[in-house]
Image (cartoon, rainbow, N blue to C red):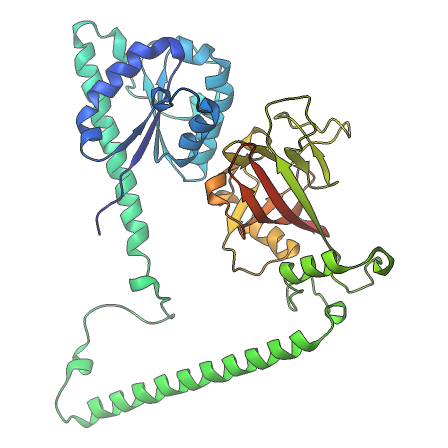
Length: 406
């Protein structure tokens, strides 16, 4: 299977356009032979440049930073682009190549002090007649980083079982042993083959019995009233699925609503529609505080209608994200059955895979997200509608549980 192209994204200060051109020229042949290259010059007029920028920052395999005094002085570069890149690197989602183009001074507390720059001695533009050679060395260093990315990807692929199958514990892949290929009539060889056949048969029988028991148990559970299902927070007896809880919440009349009784699942499902708008005077709701259910408008995290409250999700034209892109979102497969308490366990277990932003084209109707709120609670968010036409809107089914904290 051919390798997928490695995605490269380049970030620089606007006044350093000449350095971007030099870098782009030095890697021209790599671009010609398959790497996917992005910088802000690829954003067409009329497109939302900031959304395009962060979308490529989120998807790049290698992030190149062209470091100069102008880059260090840029608030946008140092407070938005660099922290996002460092968070993805810490999560193992990308590599960073910081290129020291010109001399600069950093505070000891700067996050850029945590990573090694290239070159480690003189900056690229301070080498006199050897500046062109220095850009060639930068291109070679990028080649080494790309090889490392591809090697790590091949290692991950090699650890996957063939055809996506799950490998049973104790089963090893490799050439058959002498006993397996022995075609003679040795009594020991025949006994070993018979023993292996019996073991396989017992395993299959045991698996069938377990499957029958599981199906029978599930059928009995389906016949019960959902209000009668006990819930053990340790996960010994799973609560009803989010889908059933949503249906129950939508169909219940006000007169039938009641507080959860002891040992009942304290889940609450609500529906919200977020609609993006660039007009601050409209009533469009484009952000949501999950803890209180308060919607709001604007890209700032504060909820104006409820002072002191912060949004957990913000909708922009091409993505759904947390304030400052803090990694608190975990997408999971739509067919997976999950509740807020199990969601809290997943958020803790998969903390290195959490994301701060999800492109809208990855959120078709039926998509599910685990979200950690700013108060530490967990929520299951299901996308029920996704309109990509202007103005962009999302309809979300949000299910929370008291006490489901991470």
